[in-house]
Image (cartoon, rainbow, N blue to C red):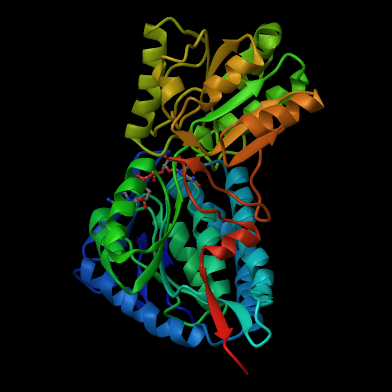
Length: 485
Ligand code: NAD
């Protein structure tokens, strides 16, 4: 019987260290707000620095046994976790709608996406292959094996409360690592429920520990510990830089999935309908709160007006509202500060000559809703072009030539996702090769799945998640060099 980490009936959630639920009387709590109503609907027991240290020690002990189990056995346990997630997809989605706000259809899609990482790494656990390298000397024998890095820490954001957890935990467990997870304090319940399902599936206690608490305090302990050999972080570039510096004294392995400022380019020769649907999917999914979402939409002169008109017509069909209402296609922003930032970008654009062709206002009433917005006559000097808006705002920038737009696209310190639409195959290769980004979507607005590497260049991060490359983050290569046998 697994401990109960989430009990929505009582409005409570608890962290977990080994099989000890952090639920003692008197423990301070963190309030969890529903962004669609602005009201607190649950509380989670707050973990302290002492708890974080205990979690690291528990993970250290659990990992010693886990790494000795073969990849096949680890994979079988992950497979059972996948089954549990799939069986309780509706419960997970429900919790996610409550704490994050996204529409139920998107929440269910995220659960499936999150589960796909567990399934993928359940299979990959069997394939931790090494290599035999021929030596220049007849006597020497050289073998390279892959070993788990050990205890890993994960710090995850609120925008994908399920997928960001499994994208880290599944490869870590497959590789033979143990993990201390600090989910976002805004959306910890989904993470806690996922871990509860892992335990119910038979995962030995101690391999996945969850500490929800003051981010700086817990982050300080996780980064300072010499036992923690790897930190995987998804979040803002600012916090990523801070954590990177904090990891320097103990020289940890780092996986950083940071901010983006994705260019989305529509060339004159694009298929107009495909480009509009791609923009809609890339820009407005999760109310524009995805690190890979189109942030700057460059549209070539010849197709600009037709694209703007068609996109605006489609954006007008979007319906902000509660994620539990089947008619809603756009949830709230995560909190007031997030909406204020998106609104500030609209005000700045307006003040500098941009035109609001649809939306542009907050939605009156409870919660942090805002209207899906399209801006035209945007220029590269405006805030919405220079910074990640992280909201449902599509700024359109008119361009003339391929060289000009590639230069604009690359004039950013970020390099996570990028997109462009064109039917000229030579241009497709030319632009895909010229763009400085970890991921390029060509004639598509959706690029991420468990079987391909996800990650960025420049200040968008280090390392890759997903695919067989995602397993590399959680393994070290060990050379065994035999002088003579
Ligand atoms: P954030 O950086 O504020 O928070 C992310 C996590 O870091 C949270 O768990 C938070 O509690 C924690 N944190 C904050 N300050 C900390 C500190 N001092 N020490 C330790 N931990 C700390 O980011 P956010 O607002 O939750 O998420 C939005 C950002 O994340 C955006 O910039 C977005 O682009 C980025 N993001 C990137 C990816 C990716 O894969 N590249 C995916 C999702 C989100």
